[in-house]
Image (tube, rainbow, N blue to C red; front, side):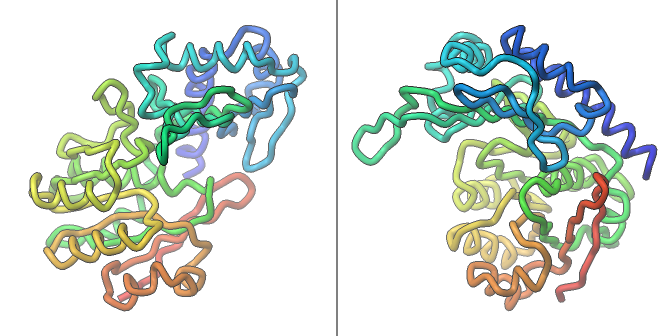
Length: 309
């Protein structure tokens, strides 16, 4: 596992170098002066108007010694991220982010321009969050073994607070099940509402989610799960971040059709999950058979598997 962890740190450094291509020169130089050892654990870069860039390293923001971010810097980064064609990513801007080549994500904040009840765009940018996307092959290991059965796979809910690696593990499980790692390949339908799992860029997944995976993005999870269920005949349905009653209803419907489910939720552990009303029916109905609880200690992530039904 240590070799896997070190390998993934090396991948993350390469991913950061790719993501940083959208930064103006002086800002990028300030980031890289932090040194490769620190940057190998970097998860995102924060650009706030009037302040130097900060780098999120293991949940803590570290300030760089570069210049303060200007309004022109923010504009240049968005132009680079959208390949100087912001109107082509207007739908993503409305949702508060832009997906970059490589699967990196640029979160946007500023002054919203509205047309009635719909946000159309951001008129003035005030801050950007460049989240570094990095594959983590080899981390599914024991989790995959616990979920595999002779018939297929047990439904599982991945639990962790924000930033602990839920989406990364979900992606790797999808790839393994789709490609037939430690068992037969399975058809996986992925409802990727926010584009964080497969990270489609001009229709092409920027992450490897497997040869037998069908991806639907840009669609609300509840609708996406229903479309995949009725149109793609999946053996496994996957979705990131079950958060609202509509998501729960869609998951319950899919479970009633005999499809295995993989999803994530913000919760520290199973006890925390049981205290949240939106998830209570899922637990009472036995939709998920296993809970995968992620923890991070001394910079390393570990997974604990709990039996739900």
